[in-house]
Picture 1: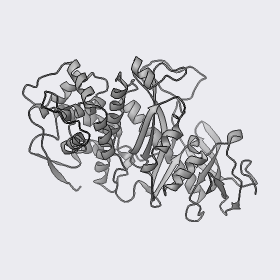
Picture 2: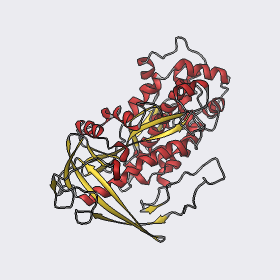
Picture 3: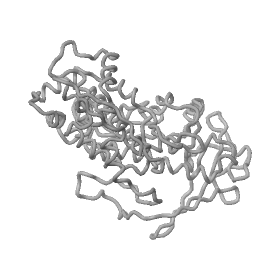
Picture 4: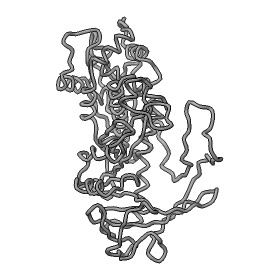
Length: 456
């Protein structure tokens, strides 16, 4: 295993609590100081809580989402040695307000992007495989948050919508947009349109039916990125007349003013509980049936689920299903950017670990393993001790490599909400919650066995 080393120096004096354990390598002091200068957020005089320290406090608050900020401060100072003055909760709150949102936003802008991999592990036929999707998150119930993030009908809390573009191979975030979950102009497609700058050539974007609007399909294609998007069936399905039939059963059509290839597929999933069958209609800008066979594209579309798993990491693994803690809109925005930054730092550290051995696929790195190791390193202040030389893989990477996940298996499980903070199952019909090993058969449907394709 190759080792790359670097020297990391811890801050001194009032700057000492400003660290993120070993993840400080991914979010170094110089980067934080740069965004503070760029956003005009450097403190005018050195206080007990300098701006750099407050940034790391917010990031550490993500790693310890179950704790208040006074307790998070205790974790940051636990491994420093000596006596560190403990600020009050009010002082920490004032420092977070003084910092503002801009430094966290700028820091995310510097860190976002696909994590590096070896041997094209995150690519398919030379294309970086990405997915776009959205999720909603519960915000702390306060008068200010209810104005900025109105409650959806039937929800107990104000709701925030987050839409992101994720690299499927590493689950690193290329870009993200968020805001109110309800109201005019606050749907998933509106937020997705704000992420087009993250797309470009040598990419393929996977998306579900909600992103198949013709105007958005055209805008994605205009970036130079290819796309593979599922479209709706039934009455709300877009009209996709067959302009030219292709040998593999797919056909050429037009959608959103651009030429697309339409693939109708029947998918049979067989498990010990019996088979189940469904149909998918996909559109893609990859028009060549020889270079990009229809069956291979249907299999590729399965990787769209990686963004769902990325949201699971954010909402369940990191937050533990908890409501965001900030009671002001600015604090909520800080918290979302901090969440995205920490997730990106973890994912980058995990990619560094799997890159140390080209035989290891990135999806064998366990997120929960990396998260637990990162928390430990914060408490121990490991990886940021003065004049200590550490390898790039580090303790987080070694924990990941020592606890690799099995090779990815084809499995199926009911898509149900599992309430982490409730001992009761959700109401509704009996649901088989068993995870089954599965085999998948794909049939490309042609006009003789498809009722969805339209003849010219």
